[in-house]
Length: 252
Image (cartoon, rainbow, N blue to C red; front, side, top):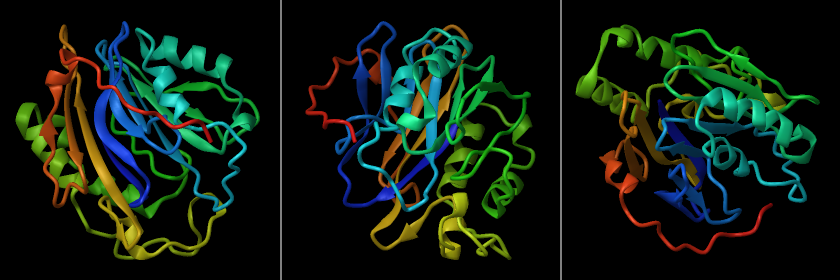
């Protein structure tokens, strides 16, 4: 799994920390504004992440979407997490978004923009989630998929290096789809179609790579800053580190 977090640069966050001592122990980023996270991984290889639907009409009275990955990372398998998730959370209580949860054996997708959410199991292969539904048309997704050609045969450190390069890419589609933004939002600049985004006060804040290996906790790499300038550093030692004491914000 490889992911960039794009957000307002002024919004406080910790790129990677111990989110919970478990069991299972959970690693991920911490959003200081709402106290949740955009991505969480546990020692049993369950990874949960989200993307927002950028409608420009966020309702501050609704619960924080940052609850989602934290909840998912509290389970032993992705299937167990996904089934519990749709029982525990109602889409109408949150601003809209989308969820992926996997564990190396199974990957599931949950659309939280609809009235009644349900987990959808995905076939083995490459799946790319941006700020649109998983199967929605996207020139950004098409570009990333082209950049990933042949990656199925890459293993070990070469795979990690390939993903680092992708996350740091500023390439944009030759004809970026700018007729409308994701989720019906206003048209977005061409630079927003790059993997690594730089748009003044908004852009890529951090990156994460998670590599699941049988019988051991996942290997995790994280950058505190955009991956084009901030190195992705392995933080796997956090599985054995004492949990950090942080002041988490209230929901919102």
